[in-house]
Image (cartoon, rainbow, N blue to C red; front, side, top):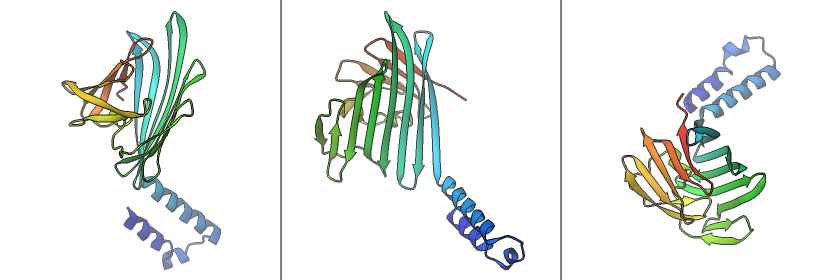
Length: 221
């Protein structure tokens, strides 16, 4: 694609273009347009969406994107779930995880419950270790480079993986193969989350929460 861009750029400077009645300003617009097209070619985005169920009731949506540009990959996760367990509960999640190469360099998780902040975590690689900060503004460090987080689990089946980083608990969590293309995280709070796969992509998540067991079912286009 780079070669194609260079050839097009050279073409705009040929004698052919000199015979076309185009002002210098218009030529600049053409070059800017070509550069924008070049950047779009090198920006690859993959999106997934899931419907959240409590039993047979649809209670929310999850939208996830994975965008790659040059050597950087960004995962963005956003969800909104509304359910009623005695009282009405609305949970909003927003997560952003950045990788450079195969190493995580930043992870941010923000969660509200009925509008009140419940989780506001960050993990940033400083070249030597991760600086961790949680909702209570408490700090910690994690020295081991992270190559897999829960964000990856939607796009990649974790075959032969022993643990993944939890953006919520800010630690490595063991993951076990518990069935045909099924993998389960046993969380520190006693809950479990099971991921099921088809063709290497997560097609369903069964998640224990503090309020109910939920299912995230992939929307197939």
